[in-house]
Structure formats: structure tokens, C-alpha cells
Image (tube, rainbow, N blue to C red):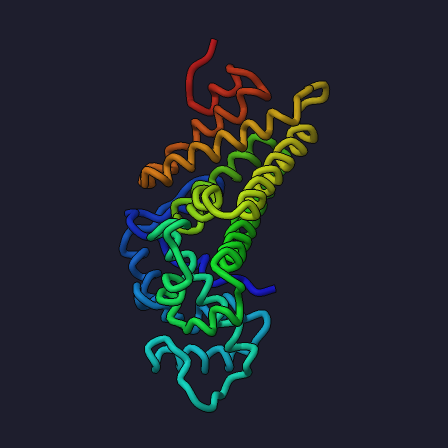
Length: 293
């Protein structure tokens, strides 16, 4: 299954990168951010994609040698495939063009918002033609949904992987999951904005997919609480939905206000909010470092 390149686009307008490792948040400086920018997308105006990014997106399906040729062709022709006979399989070219359109959609939505974005905005940022757009997508909404699905899959995978590192201690699992969520939002704000903010303003299908994503996380939380909390604990399934909805609402506000610099500092409060309905105030206060009596 292809892994979309657009999730590798580095964050913009934040000073540090965060990621979860060993149960704590580490940081990358702006120097590292600039390195990633030049490694992944050479131009801020058009998707100049290098070999490493193409390998990440398409390496499971295509030989490395052909991906190398594609990267060289794009670099030598201002990020456009040159006209005339090509040395690449048509399906590989199509796969790359589709990924470029997803990047273009993500950038356009981040810059303009869903309602103000049109197909022309997407193809300008993707560096492809209008006919190429319609070879892959029926309209703007179709492209948006494809981009949303890839963002959502990426978010699910990161949180699931992190939560599994928490083992059989439910608080460790949710703490690791929150770490991954905050890292995703900090390092991939455009993707986070698409999933958390813009999906609300898009089509009914996009809204339903957003709700399905929230329901998925709530179901995971409820399942693990019932499995790992002491026997005899009784909780409504609505509790998990309330926790997930509250966390999403907080990130919605932060993204809308562009308050991104202190996201890791939210972890203790998120943990308090999640633990409180299941274990009570005394246990939840431990997550804030408060002394309890």
C-alpha cells in the first residue's frame, strides 16, 4: 500500500519539532527543521520531490532505480515531467502525480481554508496540469477526501504504535498516545489542520469521516479501559467519547489560533482530563504533579 509523501512535509511557523521517544518528548531545533525542508521539498511554491521522499511514498511498489530516474527528471525540469518519450512506466508517473496533487491540496487548504480553495489553487501548488488533476480526481471534494484519508491513516498509525509501547498499564498507553497526538500536531500542522479543523467545513462526507475517526479513538480508549482497569470498574461508553471529543476541541482551538509553540506542555492537563472520569480526582492529580491528601 502506498505511503503518502505529503505527510513528510515539514512544519511551518514553529520553532521546534517534537516527537515521542522512550515515553518522553524530545526536540529538534530550527536548524533540523530547515534541513528537513531542503531534504523533502526544495521549493515552497512547487512540489520538487527528491529521491528519498519518493522512496518513502512509492518504494514498496516500484524499483529504486526507477524512482531515482523520476527524481532526476523532476529536478532537471522545474519539478515537471518533461514532454516527449519517457523512460518511466506510465503507472509510476501517475502515482507520483497523484501524490503531488495531495501535497497541493494539503498546502492550499492550509493557506486558504477549504471553502476558499479551488482546483486551480491545488494544481498551482502541485505543479501539474488541470487535465492531470481530473485524471485522478473528479473534483476538489474528491481530492480533499483522499488527502483526509491519508492524514487520518497516518494519525491512527502513529497513535496506535505509541500506545502499544505503553504495554498493559492503561495510563502509560494513553500517555504515549497523547504524546504521539501532540507530536503529530506539532510536526505536521497542515495535516492536523485538515483532519481537525477543515473537515468540519468541508462536505458531509468529510464530516462523517471526521466523526468516524473520533469514534474509532473513543472505541479504542473504552476497550482498553475495560480491559486494563481493576475489575469492578464500571464506566459508560459515553465517557470515552467525551474524553476524545474534549481533546479534539482543545486542539481545534489551538490550530485556529495558531498557538502551536507549547503543545507538549498540554500533556499533563490532557492526562488529568482523561484519568479524572475513570479513577477520580486524587489519581488524576498525580498527572499534574499535585500533592493530594
